[in-house]
Length: 56
Image 1 (cartoon, rainbow, N blue to C red):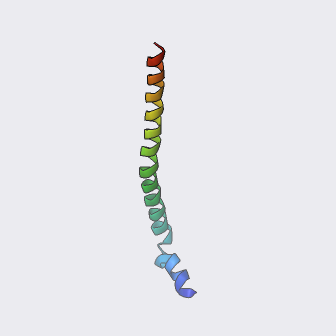
Image 2: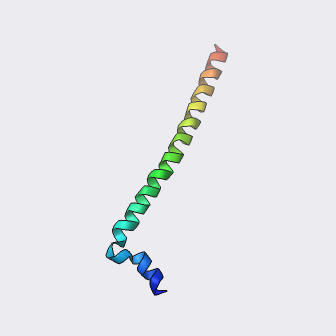
Image 3: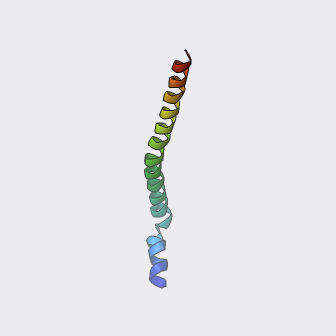
């Protein structure tokens, strides 16, 4: 159990290490989610344009 606590403590640098891991994970997650949201918005925009063109 002591080894696990030492691992998470990171020799006194836990705040910096875990913060950097958290920020890296957030950036990687954003790099996955943002294009998916952009794709959804693009398809919605194209569908609106297609419907508008069909009405005219």
